[in-house]
Structure formats: structure tokens, C-alpha cells
Picture 1 (cartoon, rainbow, N blue to C red):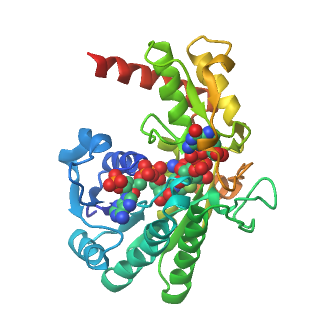
Picture 2 (picture 1 turned 135 degrees about the horizontal axis):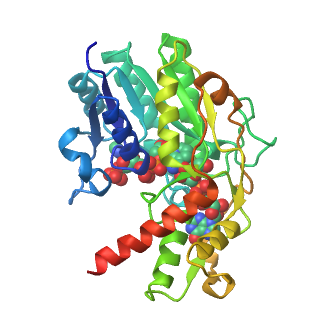
Picture 3 (picture 1 turned 180 degrees about the horizontal axis):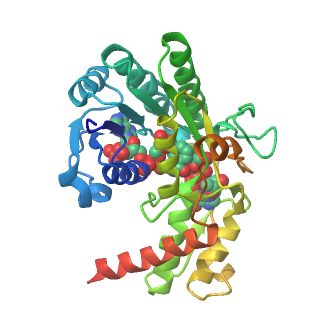
Length: 325
Ligand code: NAP
Ligand code: G4F
């Protein structure tokens, strides 16, 4: 059988790096779209850089996306690139719309014009549920996004379905709940906490400044979630799936578990609440029901909340020790 070919946008990001590893292990030829930066930011993929092929391109630039699809001639396209930080979407709402919403249309256009037989994955988000109208959230739960990011993702979700219905494409939307890892960006709350706790443990900081501790998220491990993306594209028919653990925890519970991972029982003295990290509109509560994915894809998360927190804290301690040498 011919070697399968995949194009990943957002390969330098958390999910892109795990997905690239996953596909390499399945013997795919992996291409990754990277945008121009004044210094390369290949930290998350440096261990596999010699096994993948990077193609220059930007979600803002249709021609570069079309050329990337022509060049890579993919069987599968994973559109993971986005402005993915919710807080930034209020300070850069137009850019967020350009990347996260219209970027999906540009990728779909590239696919439609160049390789309509390729299978397409769109990275949709539980942020689309926002102010939730039912619990737990499923593929059928209506959306009420609470940020320019959430609104942009709703657009990306529906344009994917629209292209599937209009042009008979194999285009799917994975509605993924929060997933984290040691490769998570430092601005997201879980990594901010694991890094902060590691710094406190090593005597490099005295406290962590956080915003709303009451928000609850359904947190899973990114390594588990990229398998679900791939499984969605291995089906005979396209469909949209919720991917989640089915359990949730508050930010406060994450903080507590992270301090417990270093054997510190009293976390309160280390945490400062700062208005700077409060949002104009909050998503208070997310919990997903991944029954459809379990039934049709045979997908289940493997890493528990406690294991995830410990993995992130341990990794940050090791990283800080290594960097201080
Ligand atoms: P991430 O770490 O922030 O990675 C985002 C990626 O997009 C990076 O590779 C980034 O490149 C790239 N990118 C941003 N703007 C671009 C542009 N204009 N042109 C080309 N590439 C661009 O995000 P992630 O956590 O891996 O998430 C992957 C996708 O899943 C995103 O679409 C995110 O919104 C979505 N999602 C994530 C979660 C989650 O919990 N992680 C949940 C649901 C959905 P640079 O390295 O150059 O910045
Ligand atoms: O870690 P967060 O920034 O992630 P958020 O907003 O849930 O978004 C992430 O998950 C989405 C899936 O639902 C993705 F689509 C999206 O791309 C991204 O990956 O914030 C989580 C919660 C929020 O309620 C926030 O208000 O943590 C709260 N929080 C409290 N203090 C904080 C902080 N968030 C951040 N980033 N920093 C804080 O200091």
C-alpha cells in the first residue's frame, strides 16, 4: 500500500507536534505548514524535524495554502492552526477572526480546488458551547460562544459542515474539550500553574498570579486527543465528534493537585488573585459527553486528571533544572 500523506497546519503548536509524532509512528509522510517568524520556533518539533517536511505558509495567505496542498498532495489535512488563546481574542478580535474563522475557509478552498478527495479535519472547540445550555455537552448541544475566539470557532465549525454539504467533501469537525500537556503554551492556565509550582519548588518564585479560580474545565491529555483526530478521518463517512473525558475540575482544584504533586498541602499562601487575568465574559462550566466517539471511533481517554497534573509539574521541574545548568 502506498505511504499515506498528511498535511498539518499548526504543526509547531501543542497538538500539531503530538499529531506529527502519532502519524510518523503510523508510517505517514508528514508535511507541516509553518509561518515566517524572525527566529524559528520549532521547540516542540525539534526532535522530529529530520523526519517531517515543513512548508512555508500562512492562514492569512490563500496562495500559500493552495501551494502547500499542491506540493504535499495529502490524503489527509489537519487544520490545527489558529489564534488559540481565548484572552488574546478580546484584544485582537479581528486578527482572531482572520486566522481562526476565515483561515478555515481558506484551507477548505485550497482543498476543494486542489485535492477534493483529501479528508479534512477542523479543530473545533468546546469554547463554542460557552454559556452552556445543557450539561454534559454533546454534538447536539446548541452553541453560545462567550469570546471572539469562541465566535470564530463557531464559524470554522459551520463552514466545515457547509463545505461538506455543498461539495460532498470528507470534512469533519472535532469538538475538543481542553487538552493539556507539558507542551502547552505557558499562558494557558494549566501550564501557568505547573510552571509556577515548579518555580516555587525550586525557589525561583514566591507565588502565582491567577484570575478566576472557580471556572471548571474538562481537562484531558493532548496525546490522547490527537488519536481521536486521526480516528475521525479513518471512518467511511464524515461526522462531527465531541472529544472529552466526561469529568471536570475547577482551576482551584488544578492548583491544589499541582501543589500536592510536590508534596505541599497548603496552596493558598502561594496564590494571588489578579484582576488582570479576569475575562470580560467567562465560560464557567464545561463538561463533555464523548459517547458518540466511544461508540463509533472506539476512542477513550487514557490519562487521568491526577496523572496529567503530575506529568506537567514533573516535566516543568525537570525543564527548569535543565535550563539552569
Ligand atoms: P497552539 O499550541 O496555540 O498552536 C497553534 C498553532 O497555529 C501554532 O503552530 C501556530 O504557529 C499556528 N498558527 C497561528 N496562526 C497562524 C497563521 N496565521 N498561519 C499559520 N499558522 C498559524 O494550539 P493547540 O493547543 O495546539 O491547538 C490546536 C488547535 O486546536 C487550535 O486550532 C485550537 O484553537 C484548537 N483547540 C485546542 C484545544 C486545546 O485545549 N488545546 C481545544 C479545542 C480546540 P506559531 O508556532 O508560528 O505561532
Ligand atoms: O487555560 P485557559 O486560558 O483555556 P480556555 O480559555 O479554556 O481555552 C482553551 O481551551 C479551549 C477549549 O475549551 C480551546 F479552544 C482554546 O484554544 C484553549 O486551548 O483558561 C481556562 C480557565 C478560564 O476560565 C480562565 O478564566 O482558566 C481561567 N483562568 C484563571 N486564571 C486563567 C487564569 N486562565 C489563564 N489563561 N490565565 C490565568 O491566570
